[in-house]
Each structure stands twice: as C-alpha cells, then as structure tokens.
Image (cartoon, rainbow, N blue to C red; front, side):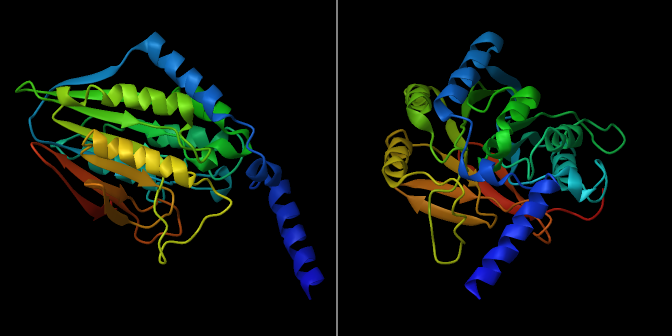
Amino acid sequence: MKTYHLLILTAILAFATSCNRLDVTGMIINRSDTEERVAEWLDWNAQHGITTISNVPDNYKVYSTSDCHYAASNGFVTHSIDDRLYQFITAERNDPDAIFSILAGDLANESGEEPYRLVNASMQYNASTQAKDDHCFVIMGNHDAYFDCAQYYKQYFHTSTYPVVVETQSGAKDLFLFLDSSNGTHGKRQMDWLEEQLSHRNEYRNCIVISHCWLFRTSYNYTTTPAANLPEEEQYAFMDLMSRHDVSLVVMGHFHAREQRQFGGITYVMTDNLNEGQLPPSYLIISCGDKIEYEYAEISARL
C-alpha cells in the first residue's frame, strides 16, 4: 500500500512539473542565496535613494496583505472580479485616508515570469475605478525564492530590503522597514542593516517592520514544512531587536490565516492570504497616528 501511494505521489508531481505548476527540485534546493540577494537590494537602494512620502496628514492609513500566489495557469483576468490583488489595491486607492498599500510576499505560485507580470499588471492604476495612484510596496516570500523566481521578482520590483519614510504635515516622521525572509532567514547582512536602521528609532514617531515569515507556531496554524521558517535562534535575536528599539508593529504573512501575538511588549500581526482558497479573503488596515491601531477588512465582491 505504501508503494502504491508513493507511485501515485510521484505521478502527481511529474504531471505538475510538466504543466509548469511545480518545480520539485526548486522547492528542495533554493538556488537564490539570501546574502547575495540582500547585497543586490542594498546596492539598488544606494543607486536610487530612499523613498520619502511627504506632506501626509498626521493621521493616515496603510493597507497590507500577503500571499496572493498568482499563477498563469489559474486563467484569471487582471482588473476583474477574480483579481483579488486588484480589488485590494482598489480599496486602498479609494480610501481618502490611505497613502499606500503593502504586499508582504509570496507573489507567485509557479515558476516563470508570468506570475510577476500578472501581479505587476494588477497593481497598475485604473482611473475608471481608482481615485488615486498610490504605490504598493512589495517584498519577497518563500514562494518567490523557489523555482528560480528571484530573478523575475528583481526584474519587476527591484528590491526587497528597504526603508520608506513618511513625513507628516506637523513634522512627525514614521519609518517602515521592509525585509526579505524568503529563504527562512534574514541573514547577517540584512540583520546588520536592520539594526543600523533601528539605531535611529528615536527620530521617528512610529516604526513598522514588514517581513514575510511568521515567527510563531501554534496548534491552530498549520506547519508549512518544508516552507521557509526562521531558525529558533534567529527568531529570538529578531524579537529582541524589535523589543530593544520599541518597534510599533511587526506585520507578516506566510501561514495564510490571521493571527496576533504580543511578545516582549511588541505586537506581531499576520494577515490572511489572497489565495483562491480563502473565502472571503481579507486584508489589514493600519491606522497611523500618535498610536498604531489596526483592523481586518474583507474584500468586497464589487469593484
């Protein structure tokens, strides 16, 4: 019976691979190295500068989601009812209090360039349905490091380790730090960069950190082994860094089900996914002011 089940599994994997839906080798052997990627991200940042959003009201909103897992083989049409990423971005662009959105990793669900072209197309401004052309900031997830996809992420989105500064009308500043945890580690170079960024924490009213891989395992969120998860020692080091610098909020994805945790005085929030299996999918609305608040909202079926 075990031999029979093994043969069935082998046949399924072979079929999936032939359909370009699954690169089995790519899931086992990650061909993209964290240290090399982060060096490229930081080099790109150095050449293009830090993104600063100025003249923002003292109280504003940011929308965040994760895990859209787009695949060309799903056959959906961008800017349609089935395009949930577009619906999410449209909701943010039609909120007069919101200034940008976040997609916290796992853009793709198969190998090749097409999923990234679809995600990029979903992000394009549509004047007929969207009131303003706000940016969507993106990071890599573990699925974006599988299957040699990092090259396509880089082609469309350029960097996954970077700061964004928001300057309000009264002179307050908020810092958003975007991280690459797609190999199941932030790596030494990125952790050093993160610590240097946080050494300036006292210059900012709020500091929000965004990474893909959720840090906590509980009985009700499923294990995605062999998907990326941070080593235990790095989790402790990361959470100690968050606590020492009084980070306002840490936003993550990866496990596909909303969750909130308090550790060391810091709030960690995981968003739902935008995958087709989640009905109805939801996203996070973060309200930034003298304090940080957040709530979940469901995607409407209407555009």
